[in-house]
Structure formats: structure tokens, C-alpha cells
View 1 (cartoon, rainbow, N blue to C red):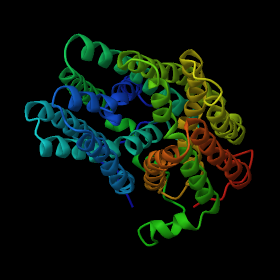
View 2: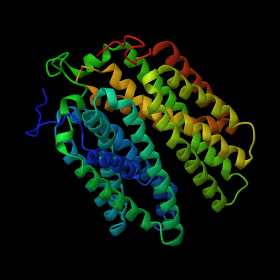
View 3: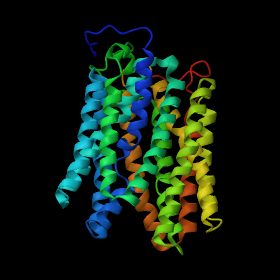
Length: 415
């Protein structure tokens, strides 16, 4: 059983802790995702790497994150040093970013990406746990919606700053931006008062069973709704992950490199801007029931896949990203809330998040390889329709396999 630190938990969190949590979500938006496509630009334009080595570097962070996610979730459930470990993880990312531009050798950059991936795996379960520990289950709906709102706002600001710094200064400046945001996230996390975090609530409580005597994996595998939700999530991300890269390739046809980059930036920013209000509203209406919103998010994805096939007009294709913003905004909030519902009383809230994140990460990683293989033998329209069909399968699994988990509307099966 997790033991509380020698700091009494306060019944009502300080306003300063809640504001610091806002800041942590804002600054960690860019930190959690690393350098993303900007790494490829740096490696190509500044270091003149070939396509194969760039591909390897781009995959290292994702692989490291997938490997670390389940252990990270389990550690979050067991430790009362969530703030301290979060600050260390931010520091590792800042250090890796700076080292990558000071010593830009092949192995240093790959090592930096691996460190970033391992550290990034910590943040999603840690922030969710700190949030649950501060506001408790009753306040989780709106607070997760608020977290995601600040997260997407941070992504928009980071994307704009990265674009400006890369254009007017150098791609190296984007590494410095990542390091600065890591430091600011550490400061925000440090401002959260330890006495405001109830670590027992943060792990989903553990009164139902002694999770040290029963294998966590056995407990999770007994929960059929949770397994079906995980399957639906894997299928959703398998269909979704390759859509934006495919859109980028489609936009590149007949356009200059500069125009293609501008359209891709527009796609990302449009989606993130839409996610800001959608995340807030999802948290606001989640107490009225989860399933209808979950099905809405899942239903949007196959529609999006079909709409990509109707034209090559860049304005139309960028506009379709509004749907991406709606679907991802809803899913980002509900995925945390549904896991919280289905693991209530188990003490495995964060372990479960990590396990699902690992499965989803694998699905997303395979998505690009799968879409590339289909595209090699067909065309963009056919590939998008295949992904839309997989998204439809995800919708059916969610519809028939995942129950309403909000207490008062259904009786979810606990772990």
C-alpha cells in the first residue's frame, strides 16, 4: 500500500496549486511530444543526414516511449514523489535537447531522442495522477477538460514559436525552445503544494483489493469492458495516426516545399485551436454520460477519412482538420475519465493508463507502416478509405463493447 508522505492532505486544494497545474499542462504540451517534424528539418537542412538515418532518429523517441509507458504508469501508482520525478523528467528532456545541438553526432542525437522518449512516458500518467490526487474523482471531469484545454493552447503557442524561430533564426533555436519550456514546466510543477495531493486518490484508491498480493495484469485482464475499450482505442489510433502524414504527402503533390510546409502547419494549428474549446466542453458535459461523446469522437474519424478522398484542394483538406480537432479533443478527455471509472477502487489507475498507452502507441506506430504499404500498391484515395474502414470497426467495438461508465448512468464493472 502506498504510504502518504509526512504532509497532511488538505481537504480543499490551494488556488495556487490549481493555477500551477494549468501552467504545467500548458508548458508540457510541447515537452511531451518532443521535437516532432522539426527534428527532421534540422537533421536534413543543418546536418545533411540521409533519409534512412532521419527515419531512424524519428522513430527512436516513439519506441522508447512505448517501452517505458507501462512501467511509468506502475511507478506513478506506487510513488508519492510524483512532483519530484516530473521535475527530473523535464530536466532530462531539457538536457537532451541542448546536448543534441552542442554535440550533433549520430549517436548523441539518437541517445538524446531515447532519453526524451523515456522521460516523456512519465508525464501523461503523472499529470493525470496529480490531477486526481488534487481534485478527487468528483472533480476529475471538469479538471481533465481544463488540463486538455491548456495542453492544446500550449501546442498552438509552441507550434507558432517553433515556426517563427526556425524561419527567422535557425532550426537549432527550436531545441532551445524545447529546453526552455521544459524548465518552465518544472517550475510550474514545483509550485504545486505537496499537501494538496492525496496520493491514495491519485492511484484510484486501493481499498477494494490489496494490489501487491494480486498481479496487476491478472486484475486488468479480468475486466472485460476495459479490454474492449483498449481494443477500440488501438483500432482508433491505428486508423488515425497515418492520416495526417498521408495528408501531408497529398498536399505536397503539385506544391512547393515552402507551400507544403505552410499547409501542414495550418493543419496542425487548425486542429489544435478546435481542440481547445472542445476539450473544455467535454469536461463540462462528461458528468452527463461518457458513451454518447465517445461514440461521437469515434464516428468522426471514418467520416474524416472519406472526406480526404473527395478533392485535392488544399483549403478543403485543411478545413477537414476541424473534424480532427473535435474527435481528438473529445477523446483526449474521455480516455482518462473512462479509465478512471473502470479502475475505481483498484489502485491501478495509472498502471492501466500506461498499459493502454503502450498498446495505443504500438497501434499508432504500425499505422504508418501499414498505410505506407497500402499506398505503395494503390493510391491516396484507397489508402484513406482503408483507414476509414478500420476507424468504422473501432466505432463498432466502442458501440457494442464499451458500456456507459459514469456512475449513476450504469454500473461499470470494477477491476
